[in-house]
Amino acid sequence: MHPDLASPTPSQAPSRRVEIASGASRAFVLKAGATLVCVSGRVRVEQVAAGAEAAGCLHLPRSVRVNAGEAHGMAEGGVVRVTAIQAADVICVDLPGPIARFLNAMTKIFRRKTAKSANNRLGALHKIS
Image 1 (cartoon, rainbow, N blue to C red):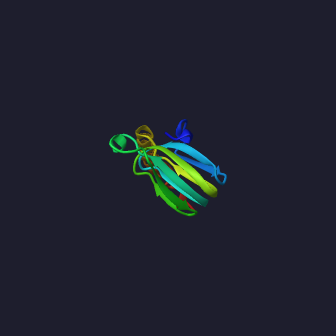
Image 2: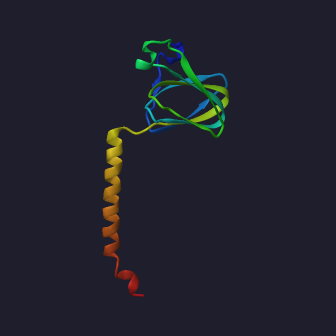
Image 3: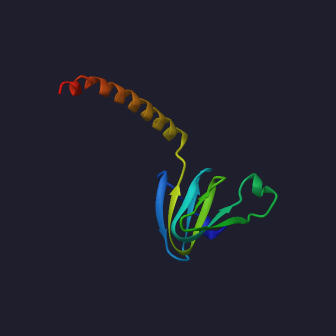
């Protein structure tokens, strides 16, 4: 295991913006489907093989280079190390959990219902003038 990956910092918010100095690296724990967006600079994204994929082979990291304006989607969840080739600005967009998705859906439903009833209360006022 890489020493940089020993203590990753979990993403606390669904999206997080991080500035990484040239040559420095940061480790993240991301879910499958998360996206890393490189806003400026150039980074190398490495994800260590884990689980059934690594059972019969070496634990070699898969490395992808991402330039400014490009994004990289994570096919599998796990620990990801982002190393800046040039000083970079990276946005890490993690997927919300199932509870957060459920609450967002419920909020949208209630907003639709309250918007319809709010329009009915003021329906006659605009016709007076």
